[in-house]
Image (cartoon, rainbow, N blue to C red; front, side):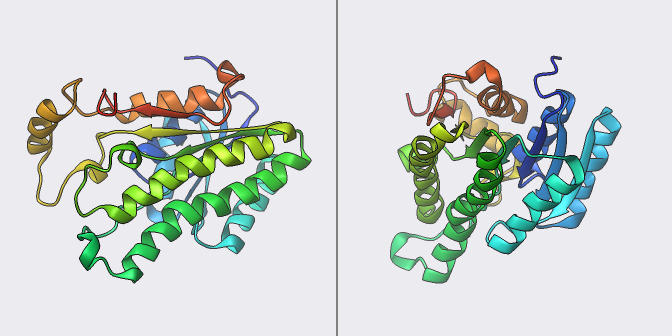
Length: 253
């Protein structure tokens, strides 16, 4: 294991489970001081416990990404505790309840977009404000390959929100590269988390479905997705600006 993030302070939102938890642990393993942010105290506390068990350094901050005040507090708390903010992985997201477009309630639409899209905007604004004043940084947003292909009936709000995150990332990247801030995104395909399970589906059912629908023939591990996140956040990708790295086993190829 390298120490690509030694002396770096990293915020990960949605750090209580899945890709977010794996990301927080991976950054810590590579030397970062990690702030695990999420809406549920018990899950981010568990992430911090796992990082401590790994021998890393982390703290937890409860934060709702739909609240500008909460995210401003997250950034300010991070800076006060750890002396700065160098990297952010904006990963918090929700699927929402599936419904055909004709039956989709506006409240459900707004709920998904508020977290998945507006939450990324709010997070970037607070992160950029600090990074711009302190020499720059890197930001990675979690989008989704569903934003490219849309082949998930009933998931209009999720698909639209993630397509918008990809485009928002590109615009933000051009807006702020002159500030020394590199902004990119990762678009995972089906990953070994609870979010990739369809209602009533078991792990074995999912494996059988993906064996025929994903060219590589399987689900991604969280570590495979996180490897892309860390690469984009590191100096190894120093010439990559406004890119959405699709990691989906060939589905969108």
